[in-house]
Amino acid sequence: MNRRRFVASSVAAAAGAALVRGDAYAGSVESGGAAGPSDHAVPGAIAEDVIQKARFPEGFLWGAATASYQVEGAWNADGKGESIWDRFTHTPGKVRGGVTGDVACDQYHLYREDVALMKRLNLKSYRFSISWPRIQPTGTGAPNMKGLDYYKRLADALLEAGIRPWCTMYHWDLPQALEDRGGWPNRELAGYFGEYAGILGKHLGDRITTWAPFNMPWAVAYMGYAAGALPPCRTSFPDFLKALHTLGLAQGEAHRAVKAASAKATVGSAYEMAPAYPKTETEADRAAAARYHAMNNVFFLEAAMKGRYANAFVGEPPYDAMGVRPGDEKLLLAPLDWVGFHFYTRRIVSDASKERSFGGGSFGGTEIESETAGGRDPYTKIRAGMPTEGPLTDSGMEVWPRGMYDLVMQITKEYDHPIIEITESGGGYLDEPYAKENGRIPDTRRIQWFRQVLAELARAIADGAKVRAYHAWSLLDNFQWAEGYTERYGLVHVDFRSLQRTIKDSGYWYGRVAASGRLGDGGNRGQ
Ligand code: FCB
Image 1 (tube, rainbow, N blue to C red):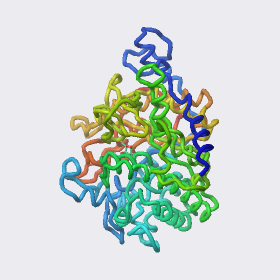
Image 2: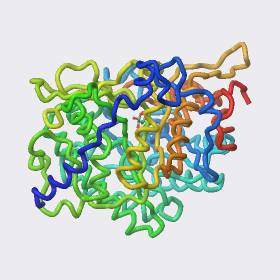
Image 3: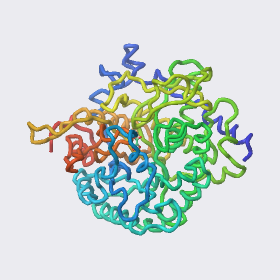
Image 4: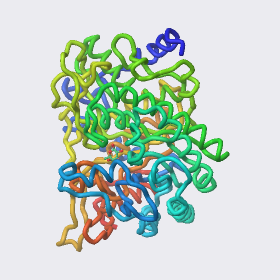
């Protein structure tokens, strides 16, 4: 790769990427002014009249998202191989409460019931993921037809219900056999992933046309190989860097392979993004926030769109340590048909270039590292914390609706008005069936979360962002990774003993929004 050109052009991408913190509502609340549309007492909240006025365009795709390991269960059914999540949850002491995803919501067997629920909630798009070890039990070689059959049945049931099947090829359940061959730091995995994507395109491409290679590739690399917070729980910066590049290459391979196998395939993404605000207005913190944006938000987007990585680094980018080879820019390049990303919360970022220690960070839906000493890694040299100025969800994430507007507008501007899909967005609240009201689930806080975040999304659309879909995380309460079943994100409640599903008040409310394109009232009515 022509290093000089590569670096020079990617520096330009990172420059000026920092959001101005004073833009956020906190700024106007702190200064006592009414600069933003918020006159609400809760920091970060949006005014009721803005919510009432919000309108979504005709044909907007209202959806919900899940992931294979979090909902399917049937962990060893029909020839499925072991994944790194099976290995992790079967190791004592790893998951809160010692639980596993062996059964989870058992969507593998109950998918018809779940599709009927989606239909009842007027959903038009269902984002699910395919479990790689169901298709290739050891990650390479001939496909397991029984695994493919399950996804054919699921896609058919969705299509019959008028719901678009939206497929993530990889939502973290790597075949254990591939981890045994080195995992994502091993460059060979890019080729294996391409073969897997080709199998999906060939066998499912007649039914599924909306694809994304990876859920949250940065988290796969950092949480899995540097912070050790997710399997395979390694704590090696060199492995993290190598994993980043294999994932970048694999994204390109999958893009080409699925399109070669299926003429109707469109390919986008499911990146984890968070708007990054500098902690102070110093040049150093503004540059750090720009590096956060380059690494956490657009590293893989830039790779796909332009065949280069956004410059997220202090000093010389560590391309040698990442294993970047001459010509790799051609492999990275795979321009997306639409850009998909999640929104949960925001980050306050500061410069850590003077820190001596690096590492750590934990995962609770998005990365949470405000409590760690030192900087995050010795290449980006940032600290990225989740503030607690706004209220916290039961899962401990700050509620900051304005972040949705800022993020969507930033991507809209930087990538010249791409088609955007929100791939995940939601709040973790623990509300349970209320016995005095026939088991109704009055999860009012979740409704408020969605109303505010969606009002900010509507504002971005009104200001020119081409957003065509929103996927609530999640359709169902499910297995929340290392937190086990202690967090609930569903529009639908799941009793994990009986597997009974019960639509929450937020689910009924979301169903009305999906039908009308308006956020309307606070939605306290059960039906
Ligand atoms: C996201 C993950 C998803 C879920 C939510 C809460 O980061 O993609 O699987 O766990 O967080």
